[in-house]
Length: 407
Image (cartoon, rainbow, N blue to C red):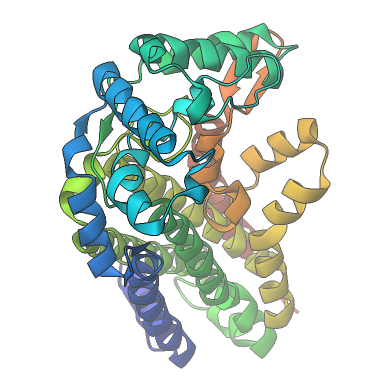
């Protein structure tokens, strides 16, 4: 235990570590605040605009019932008819603010749900019969079926699994105005930045001692092999994990305090796709993605520790670590879909550092790993893979250090 404490102290006394820890805190505060600056309503910006939006949409908060949807769509269409407008862009600004903006949050998924089942093209809100919204949630299920026929036409097991997941989604949805998707996007961006910082902290764990020759002396000491290797790996994983956890908790608390804690009771389907498979509110998806990203980061740090134990120079170890962090981005854009999905599930940094492949964006899609008659939703596969990779790579790193040959 004393060896572990000394290694932990050694990492924390490094100037670069403190710079990165302070930078992590600064980035957390900045990214928690920035999403509020993008809100503009009725000539107001920032938190004033958030408060104004809540006032305008106050009558629509709560359960998203078919009756509320019918009334909202009827009011929307009546406004267009009165002003002879084909779209809301043809309305005067004050009319849009007073009569259209109060119902837009409620009508978020209507055009998507009542899209053409063959082409997926929406009819447009002016062309949808309000009386037809009485079967809104049945239409959501039908819409998901048509989507899955297009997305997974050769995989009936994936279609069945998607429907099974959606059956668990609580309906009616809930909507509380004020929150926006920018805050969740910035949470994923923060995870990417923190993962890069963690890579810089973890990369020199073993390689720096190889490069300076200090390792030759350390190995001759009483606890200089297995215990020291485990202490080095454990200290790096602990520092990175605690830093990530503190920053994520701080981000969520600040973000939800700024937008209002009542807003995070909104169903994620009211912010993203109406047929999203996750049965979660905004608050639940914040914590779930934070936890999944933490697991991804820990597995990534364990992989970097393994690389550090195998590479003799700090620069090379750092280059390998950073490449491992951004690898999911290249896979996302360059690899064929059938191969890319498996790589995204297996590369530990996908959930935290991939940005496009992050856990949040993965949950928005309908991607499945298909093996014969078995279909696994990609977010579940990613979480399972990182949970297995964390101890595997950590043990491999320690073992590689123990077996490292003296120069």
